Image (cartoon, rainbow, N blue to C red):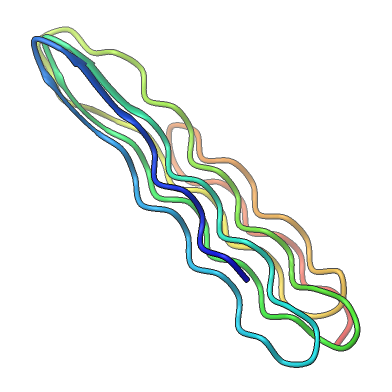
Length: 115
């Protein structure tokens, strides 16, 4: 599977760093799912760092592992660091579930499909 896209950095008198994209799943016979996208960093007199996208599940014949969840977009902080959560990982196996999107904490992992 393909890795997710990194998030965008954005800043207004602050620092913004996008999260890293999640890793793609390993190829067995089917293809692994795609990694989730990193969250966007944003700052307003603050430091903003987007969460990382979830990792994809591993593929199983004949279907694909689930996609990693996307990381949540960061909220602007006022003179304080602000962070968002990480996307959940995609499920393994046939038709593995998609990972949940990151919020304040962590996105839920996708359910595993049958092997």
